[in-house]
Length: 365
Ligand code: SF4
Picture 1: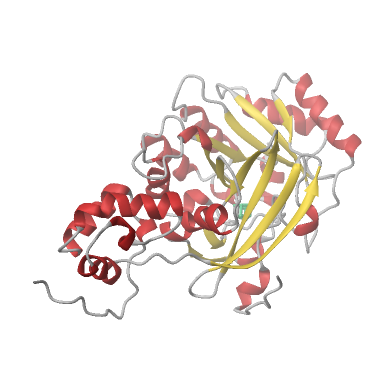
Picture 2: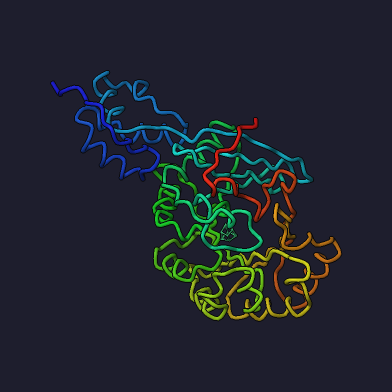
């Protein structure tokens, strides 16, 4: 008979931080009896949001070994807020991690009862975009795979949110997180969460190295979007410091080379900021930037003034005029409805600057 498992002092690995095959291999190594149930246990965790080896008909001894080798703990929900809009309810959840840091995920209505979950990849962010609340925190740390996957599991199984698509556009620069590719494989794995690559979108501020790595990683159906926000080097360098490292020509070259499939369309996100990037010339520059890229879809996002506004929100007329200019230039354009502004859940509004100072916030349910 195997010895009873002994307690460990270091935190156990989380089941939902593994890919299916990774968990099976780890169970083979760490669970002397009952490792044959690893695949079913993994599915129970990632598809049902529960971890109950007993329900799989395992012996008490095998269950004890699983519990001694792994854990299944999700971030706790610090609070949620929501806002009704024309296309449905936008909801933001602030999730508390085990070290006390908080990250945010947002449920975004996309119309016709469809929702997208926007998840965070880092606590804070080092990219320093001047229009972004998260930037004010600085980078505190990367999220672990189980903390990213945990956002999906909390959203679906704790909060009961229904979503099909996932976008890495919350707190942090996703391509800066070294675990991102592991997480994408984990989410996409047909033996586990089985989220189609078409339903996953990585959003980058323009990390050229990250885009090149993504190109080489073999994801052919994955969506990619880039936050452009200005196609003028001096303006972009002013509002997005990443441009000082990788200027527009370098970013453009990386995006031209990124074509994982013939019908791939790059999302080009453009946060419209009055007086900064909303002129007729700005629209022409966007068109020139997009011209050599095979297919693009420009998403115009009206600026959301946060706690330290850079400028005001554009008027409806200003947004319409800019979209009209882009269309005159021959671009495919979509206007993103600003969702969740009143609950600080809109683009560029995620983040909690108090965390940078190591302060814990009161829980407001
Ligand atoms: S916009 Fe994105 S990349 Fe830029 S600072 Fe904010 S979270 Fe980071």
